[in-house]
Length: 396
Ligand SMILES: *Cc1c(COP(=O)(O)O)cnc(C)c1O
Image (tube, rainbow, N blue to C red):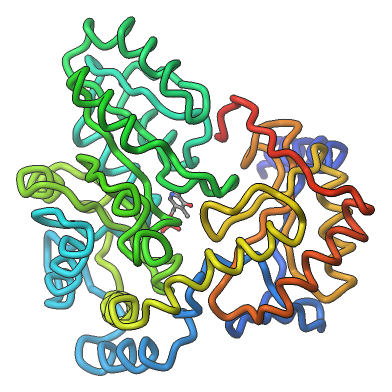
């Protein structure tokens, strides 16, 4: 009987409770921007379904047709027998929207990052990562066993110093950044990063999980800034409303993934329905520019109402500092009928617990303003705005 295991985990949980860092799962029935939790119907500002596509009838029809034709599961890894024909269609569409030679779809964004990075970078190499990179970029960096240097968030001068000092003594170098930072909603300076990458012969990898479908007319953050990073990864699970991850890059890079990316090779292919839904989502993104523009427009209406700097993406943080303040703010908003989840360390650096507000094309303008007013009066108590604190802590 593993009594020591239960004692150990119970102690850990008690310590997390004391720090207001314990997390728990809650049953959540979701229909677009509305969720039902504990018997209450709440308007959610915590979904990454920016375009409302996860509940779109066209995606549902496409997914059902794929199930009827190919079944509910892939049956094996893509390298074995799981590479159903929808993969090729989706990869062609992804490469087209990202303007790359080719693309490779992975099981999720997390699996993409933990597969891509160690396939390209090893123990003799060096990685430079923005301090606020997503957790799965850190995981990929750790798996690679490369030397890791962290540059201050969006600080290209700091990155340049690190490149000058550490790049020359390594065989290969990789720069990692989010395109849109998932918890801050700001954008990476991709043109400057690309310039440094080419100057120091480093490869630039941008994680555009929150850019595809909402920035750059739907093509993402790099397109919005007119650059093409060497490695453009992202997810099918946010604006595309489905599930899965991808890498868009040159043909040799993609072909190497097929042979070397362990998370692709040793994990079952995606269910055909998810691929079909992602293809349908890309069709809608191409056809409906107003839908694509809506989340950012709503985020800007919100930041304007609160006197904050204009939103750069559909994600707006209201940084409150300590964990308890963020949890209290979240429950105050729940009382008012809004679901806005408190984000705490280690997802964000210590001292920067926050409300992370995500806007969707499905939000009514009046509800956006009502949320702003509720935050102004009940969370900020009339204060004009908050500052966004970007501590240079690592997020994993
Ligand atoms: C959500 C997210 C991921 C992970 O994508 P999944 O498909 O959900 O695994 C990766 N990077 C960033 C920046 C994210 O926000």
